Image (cartoon, helix red, strand yellow):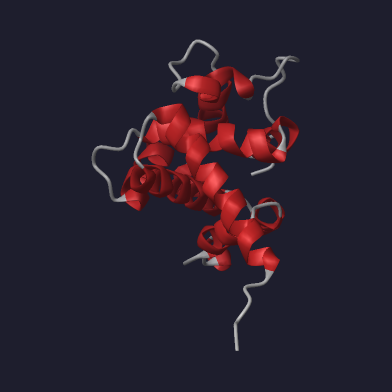
Length: 168
């Protein structure tokens, strides 16, 4: 008897693999570093958002990515207010990644670029709009140094110049 793998598993594997490929292409990182960067950034984003916002983002992720997005999540401990400064946000990505060679700002920028490429820039803008000003500014500063490829900083830059909605 031959066991068949449901097509939904092939589809999520292919989509998730494409996300990692995009991370690798835009940074030059090997697959493990790209995975750690994606996972760490998604965890820190998730932990800074409200439960509703985190769930909304999670529902849009490919099933495999969604699995590691929710891994270890404690909804009652969110949103984490200690992640309100750029330095705290980036330090959390660095710790979560467990990779001292990882550039956490590049990880954050390329992760949001991949999200924008696959979910749409408007969806990512909604996420960024719920981040504290100091963190959101990191993704809106057009003069900042980004990563190679399409993951530059201007993918999130708002054309209206309005500060993000600070509901948190």
